[in-house]
Length: 256
Image 1 (cartoon, helix red, strand yellow):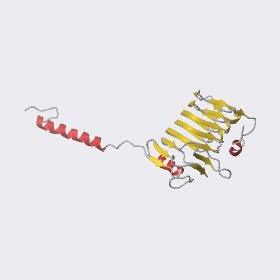
Image 2 (cartoon, helix red, strand yellow):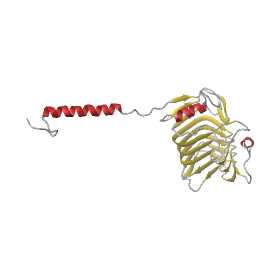
Image 3 (tube, rainbow, N blue to C red):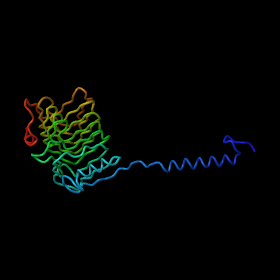
Image 4 (cartoon, rainbow, N blue to C red):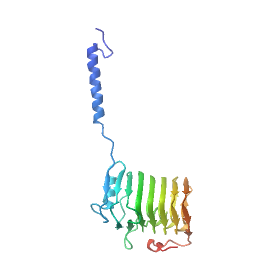
């Protein structure tokens, strides 16, 4: 009986191959499973604590995969007294509709902060909310998206203030802004929207009205590094560049 390439007789070779097959199967079975998305339900309008939006964001940040934050069962206003956690993982935030749920910085006597900050979150989707009264010395009074693929749909972004992008600031990555109203926002650059650092933004059936800028871009400001801004079936009207510093977000709500 001749020797096989395993250096033994054919029966021995069969045993070696069988052992190798079982070893391979064992490795495959012990490989970790891919991360699965989870749903975190917002159960109340509290600023913090169990069932709050803040708590849901913290929980979503702690796990991998595109998680869903479900706020469809909550109505009224979520009054924030401090900034929400920066969002660093893929997420989908779903509200009941902009007529039904508002997320806002509490009026007066609280620190300045934006409402939502997506920072290298890979992909972020947000819909069904009104975002109001955010205020920051940086970008995006209501939403800042940094190196993220942002999908914003069915939102109202009202009376927010920032250095750049009073309503929304997109820096790097890309954004689809669909059926969104940006109104009465203030910034030094880009009262409604600012685009920077090679970002690509598409506005679809969205309206930018009554926004104000102190220096440039009453409605939209795109800096030299911006890739492009595309408008499809939208409205950009009645925005102004003012030769004065922006007023407070509270006053901006009544701006022309």
